[in-house]
Image (tube, rainbow, N blue to C red; front, side, top):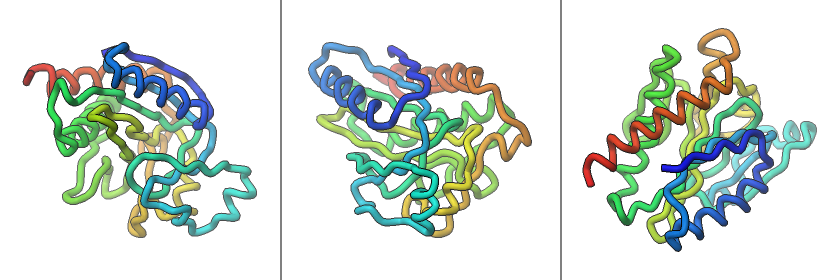
Length: 213
C-alpha cells in the first residue's frame, strides 16, 4: 500500500485530489493508497444530511467556517486543525467485496492507533465509529465506487471539539465528542500521531485483507 501525507490542505482541494486518485485506482494505474491529512475548519454534509443538522449555525458563520456537500455516507460532521483525517483509496474487488468488513477494518485500525497512546477505544453495537468512555473520538463516513473506497475516517487528536456541540454529529442527538487532547490533558505530538496511525492502518490492512487473500 502506498502512503501520502498531505499535511494541512483545504477540504475542497483534497476532494479534487481524491477524485483523481479514485479514478486512477479504478483504472488500475495506481496502487491502493492511504492518505493522511488535516483540514482547516469545515462542515461537511454526507448524502443524507441535506444541509441540516445544526444546533447553532450562526456559530459557524461567525467563525467563517465553510460548508461542503460530499458524496460520502452519513450526515453532518466537522473537520478542523488538529484532527487527523485518514482516507484509504482501496480496491476491494481484489480483496473482499464486503463493506461491513471494511468499516470494521477502519474501526480496528483506529483502536490500535489510540492504544499506542494509552487511550482505550471501543466500538458500540449498532453504531459506526470509535468511542472512549461513551464519548465519540473517531467518525466514519465512506463511499465506494465500483468497489474502490474513498472518503474515510476522522480522529479527534488535538482539535477544538467546541464545534461538535454546535451540530448534531452524524444526525444523532446523543453524541458527545471527545479528543485525545481532552483525554490525556495535553496536546499530542501530531507528527508522531500520524506516523503511528499510518503504521497501525497498514498493519490492520494486512491482517484484515492480505493474509486472507
